[in-house]
Image (tube, rainbow, N blue to C red; front, side):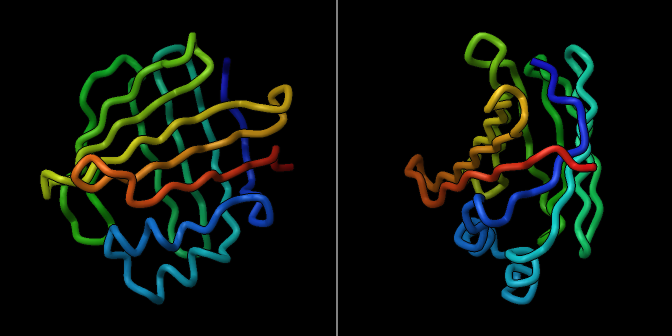
Length: 146
């Protein structure tokens, strides 16, 4: 599956991100703003390369990641710590999975990306684990943006 496109968050269908953001120590004001913020994602997916630009009223952030399992490093906008990630194709190429490790040594995150409903919807399943137990889980649904 090729995920390339411009996608807009369907707030009405998507789960709240607040529980996850709270665990990640995102300040209350930012959590409230993000919970109702319009979010656009632009994905450029070319073979084993993935570029994702997330655009909100608060920030615009671009991440480049190979989908071959090699290590990527991202600086957290919250506390400036380094998050180490690895992204791979899963489920016979129908899912792009990113596994992130946080510097505290006990917090990990899996982000599973799918195209569903005949490619009309981009779905992201985000799981945050603390000491191996799911601490927060959410699904976000995006529709094609004009």
